[in-house]
Amino acid sequence: MAVIALEISQLEAGPFWLGIAVAIAIDAFLFWRMACWYQQARLIENIPTARIRSAPQGYIELIGVAGMMQGPVIFSPLSQTRCVWYSYKIEEKTREYSGKGRSRTRWRVVKQQTSEEVFLLDDGSGECAIDPDDAEVITRNKRVWYKHDVVPPRRYTEWTILEGEPLYAMGLFKSVASVEDQSIREQVSHKLREWKQDPNQLLQRYDSDKDGQISEDEWQQARQDATVAVKRQIGQRAKMKQLSIMRSSPHKSQPYILSTIAEDKLIARYQRHALAATVGFLVLGTMIIWAINQR
Image (cartoon, rainbow, N blue to C red):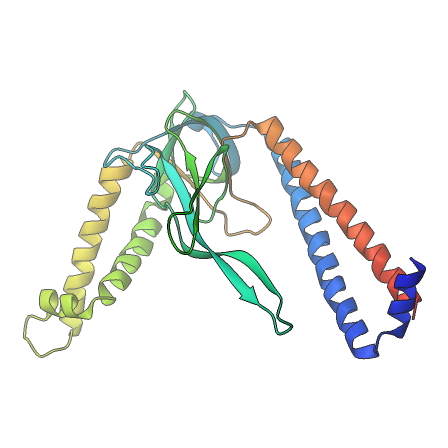
């Protein structure tokens, strides 16, 4: 320890205070993560489990079984596992060289994708459509495998939620009737943005006077067609009259969590993470104060 203290005291002011600034930033991040994890653990403990049939509108938790929506069956792209949700990433092993001639290897992400398909949660009293967009998904189903017969070597990681698997969900719950109009408007705008990404096809489809531009009347026709397409898509996958939907809340204090881990184990998981962050925060904070005192 005396040797370290001597080295710190001999450091130039610039590198020393730069290191202190980086350490303070890391310590602040640990404090923020600690607060978030403690808050999530308390939320899960304090929010009662609702039943879909009688659930109130707003921020709630549900416990049930994951199921497929009507429509095409979902398969994970890497392992072709039948599932209701998947996420994967493909990484390549790379070697990086520093200016001092040293090298280190790391895994660089070359491709990743997360399913955005809506699926169901059934708790025995009813069904709720789950929109996984922006959710923190915690699943026990994680697979990792390697391919060393390619150059560079690759690592594949895949997470899935399986049909029929127990599912915990905490998020913003609304009956479809109250969100249908807003949902249609949002999805129509999204579909029109998709069509704009292929201007040639858009012109071929809607440029009726062949002047190379989309007029206001032609754009209105495109909007009408997009609305019809969205309503058809919603009707096919969600049975809007009978289903409610859970999605992310606009409030940052209300996390959106989907988990195949049981509620009590999920609480313990967040508490462990929060405790580890607390220890890291205190240890690093003590080291920062000690280092400053050595100057």
